[in-house]
Length: 64
Image 1 (cartoon, one colour):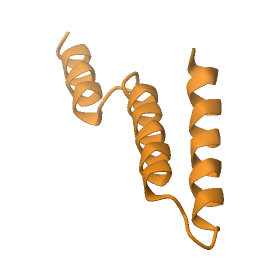
Image 2: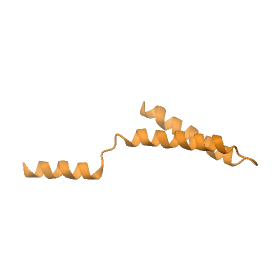
Image 3: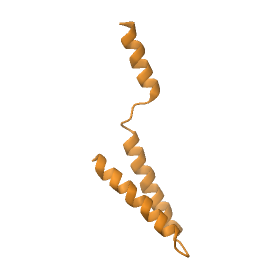
Image 4: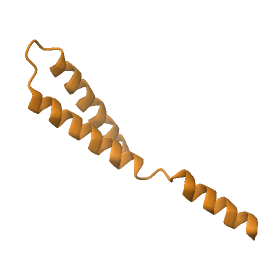
């Protein structure tokens, strides 16, 4: 599933840059590509623990 989101993000970024390089880019397509990129990034980063959670876990382990 992770690889699907990575591929989807690269395709969306390429699509947005390609659309931007045209003489008259379609703004709706660019916004849609950005939204897909942001959604993919959000899904990928959801599994990365925050620094605060990591610090709390380390403090609990040290207390024991």
